[in-house]
Length: 165
Image 1 (cartoon, rainbow, N blue to C red):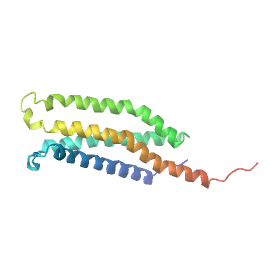
Image 2 (spheres, one colour):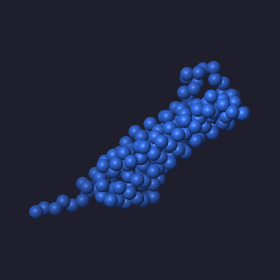
Image 3 (cartoon, rainbow, N blue to C red):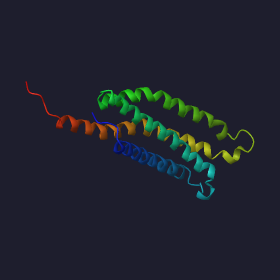
Image 4 (tube, one colour):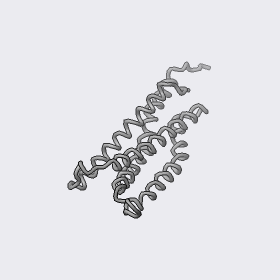
């Protein structure tokens, strides 16, 4: 059974960051496609902060999923069963965190309160970023985990000597 090593942790972090970069890129490209009148000079710091916040949430969710799957593998669970179990366990907290954050952005998006116009661009960035990055976390991270660690597990099984009776 493969243990958790520095190489595994490095791979996990790199995969999570690459997938999150893809999510950010798609999120930053989307407003220009649907709203061509948006001027890039109008993108304010609040919007950029709104792009970074979902990245942090999705990154922590991804790392928790991978770490939990590693822990289940160390308890002698096959990689596929570990990923299924982790997805089942982590889905509810991920959705609760995302929905609470999205719900909290509603007053900001509706420009309620004083000086709300300064923070209004942050709300669509957070809502769209969380929506796309939660989908990436739920579907792509487990698939990448199975591709990497499932392959190692198959190699370890084929390299192990077989018993003859």
